[in-house]
Figure 1 (cartoon, each protein chain N blue to C red):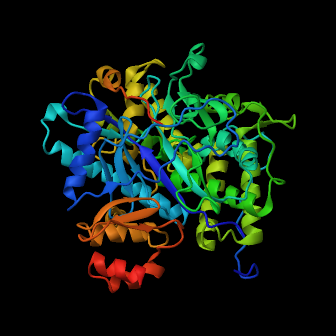
Figure 2: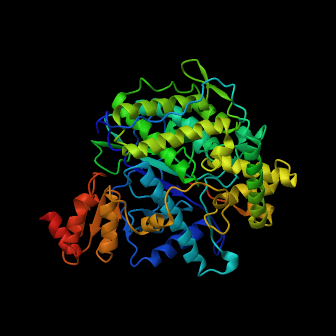
Length: 495
Length: 66
């Protein structure tokens, strides 16, 4: 039986404004302004971070481990998320969620956190220094920043099998979950610059498999940092995706990927289509073709479109769900919903784009761009088209274009607001979030797999949370009910 | 969960062949509705889009991230 597909999304947001125009300064102000809104910002504990660990053994080529910047602003939120400055971006890492729809809700809560952070920062800044935050993945000038997904996978699954199984999905899923982009930014496409690409991120990928995330980006990232018991768990760190403004696209991105991983765990590689012979060429070529007619050569020798690959992968996921129920991913109703949306988006993008412009970000954006271009008689390279692209991703509802194109919602405003302040109940994020909310004075640090308490006398107490599926509301709510103070909680846990 | 209780997953299908790549012919009333919706949306975008597009786009510079 496949391991429960605990899932989370980490998003680096784009940012402009601030006192000196430096995105590091603006990011720091945004994060600290938000943290100040909370009673007591809790520090992040770096002790267990090991982003340089590689899932491949041995490492094939010289690789540079990502740098952890411990001096930058960092906070653990009462919803179990981490909100911090990563490189030169404010980053929201969602709490661990049990299902794709729950993770979509906590991704929406992240957008709300960024809106509140900008509002809190701007309350103290003059108008000329107003901070603006974008949920996108590129500045249009060759600088990209990520929206990473994380999936819990059984340690026994061979990493090479994950690569073989998932590369077809990672190169082709952009036809339904790409966020769209005007123009191109890198050398390889400059020969004949395209007017539009399906994905913000696709052209930044240079390798099939690798450890780096900031340079020579790989389609499958090998970072082996499970944030849990390494003998049982692997965390597949997926860096290939775009940040979506469409909640349905986020849900389908997570749902399709989780279903395929569960199918791989339970039934192996046999049903998966052959991967493209040249995945880097494939992901870029697919991004460059909104007509979806480009074919790529598979290692089997066949030539398939991205749509053909997605169609086969959908069949595989649907067959798997029909046979097993796919309980590792979600309850039956949610599985039916995710597969239904994925199918509709796949069929719509090919035969009736207007019907899926309310769910597929690149289709929604492309429709506006084409309409605007026609209305004003603009050339391909008009800066107003780039401005539409950028402003689509502005998280401020008074300026956001994504808010205006009629994207379907999945969760009501009340649920999103509740998810800003409260954790999901179904993973260890519940324990972390409750500790932060209930004992802000005593929780001195936290990270994904522990919470650290200082209760005055004696040494610090570190409570390990190495199993993402423990620390749930079912397991710990009664404990919290009996523990008005941090001391009570520690006594109950140790007793 | 028992498979017998599980609802069969609904599978809308399109043929694998590619004869239907072009947009499906929409009924004219639906086409008119879509056009009118898009016109309203474009009016709104004309109102809210950053006025100095060139400077707005030029000034948006990020440091690379992950």
